[in-house]
Each structure stands twice: as structure tokens, then as C-alpha cells.
Image (cartoon, rainbow, N blue to C red; front, top):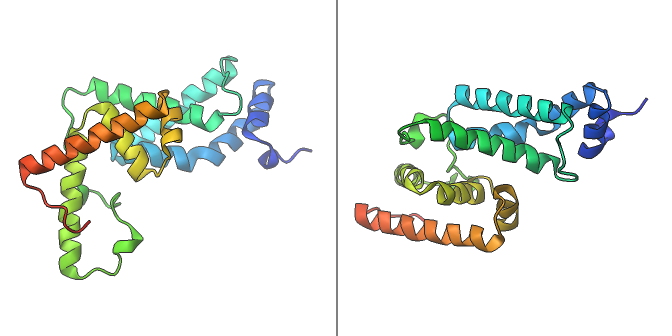
Length: 197
């Protein structure tokens, strides 16, 4: 009997479509952490993350089952794109975008090991700066905010960002450039200081 965990994503997809339902469980297990983390990073609410995560894999399941999957060699990118589109749909349904405060959450997306040896004063300044940056990022236009989060929170390359968002690398770079210009402008308007960077 074939060890399903040794199969590639595409082999698992083909086996699932041909009737081996356990293959979907392997795909889910293989990619659930990445998809869940991405959704949580974008929405910052555990219950909403769980709902969108479920919706994502329900859509993946039905699309595969209906034979409508045509992304050979790019399964995980396709799943991430489904998750991303569901997140965008969710936010489009909201009339107002709530401001997210970094200290409202147990997980700090701005935390990084290089800050671990700071003094208490430096930590307090860093927390304030992180909160300010988080608030400003949320004020960016959708496509600029998306590139900033994918680049700086998820660590994706500009090629990966371009693939995930279905744009050229130049467009992804341009969005980042405008995001940085807008962030600088907003910081000047609010007299924010990022001296700890």
C-alpha cells in the first residue's frame, strides 16, 4: 500500500479526484498550519480565522471533487489564493475597517528575536512603535497593505507575492514603493518617530 504522506500534492490531488478520500486529509494536514497562520495574520481574530480556514478547505474540497482544479504544480499557492479571496470578500462586507491594536492580541506579529535583549525602556518604545506601525499599515489601500503584510509579516519574496496576487513583479514592487511613501507621509503627519529601527 502506498504511503500517502510520501506523495506530492499533485499526486494526492489526482488520487483524491479518482476516489481516494483519505488523500484530502493528507493535503489538509500538510498545509493547514501555513493557511491558518496566513489567515490569522490578515484578520487577527481567532474565531474569524477558524471560520475562514474552514470555508477555504470546504471550497478546496468541492472544487477538487467537481474536477475544476487546473493549477498543476501550484496546489498550495492555489489554496492560499482561495483563502486570500475569502479574506478580501469578508472585509468587503464590512462597512468599516476596525483599527487593530498590537497589544490587544496575545501574539505579537512585530516581535522578532533580535529584540530579545532590549532594556525595559527599549521594549516599551518598541511596543509603542509597533503599535503605531500596525495602525498605519491598516490605513493603507488594500493592495498596498496586502503587499506589506505578505513581505514583512510572512517573509514572502516579491516573486511569491506576484504569484499569490496574480500581478507582475514590477506591480508588486510598485505597490510596496507606494506603501512606503504613504507610511512615511502618515508618520510625518502624525509626528511618529521610528528611531528604534
